[in-house]
Length: 278
Image (cartoon, rainbow, N blue to C red; front, side, top):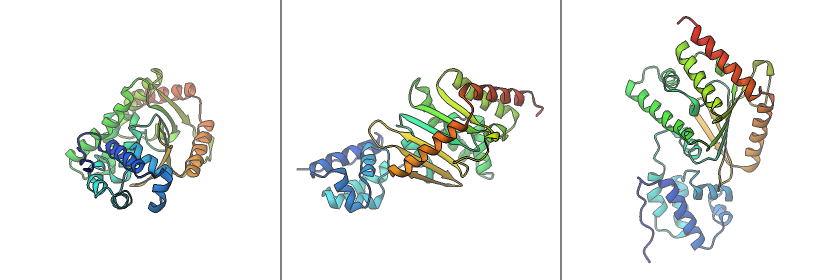
């Protein structure tokens, strides 16, 4: 019997690769746990590969071919499935974000990417890469705006963001950029498309002082947590680790102002920027 055909990179290769993995595993009579054991990964990781929420790395693909007898199919196709317009440290998180049903994010310094305006994103990327060609910055901005189109859907994903007060006070770009950026968040809140809270300076120390946190939930895969640092990012799928990060987010949100209070502050700060002299 002929093996599966190579995947067409133009048609959701990550999802197709995951579907092929599920088919091959079930054909071999293995559970997710049984396939994960010789790979030294968890059953939930195998489930995330099958759901398309995790990348299949080359070494894992080679071992899967050996275990399932798929004649190099996964090794050949994992490269096409892993193509991304995003930086390596963020690519897997961005692709998981695109199929998440719920996204919760604590942002300590910058407006989250899904809520950024074009001018704000351009100022951020120019600060990151002060000597990059304008075409490079254009590509980065385009990719970020494409991500933000997730919110064009009126109901999903649910986005709940907690912004540190520093996000509002740190001037990214100029006053015009900040007024527009905060006005955009306020408009999204008034349309009831997103939930946003502000964690005020007066809240003092809290569990997320060390950095940004993103939590993602899915219909048919375990939840993920993404931790980001300077040029680095880590996607966590261990249930105990994710549960700890969920507690962190819940406690941060509990210390933040209500959405109504937060909206009033966001719009007030936006108005202050709008009336500042450039």
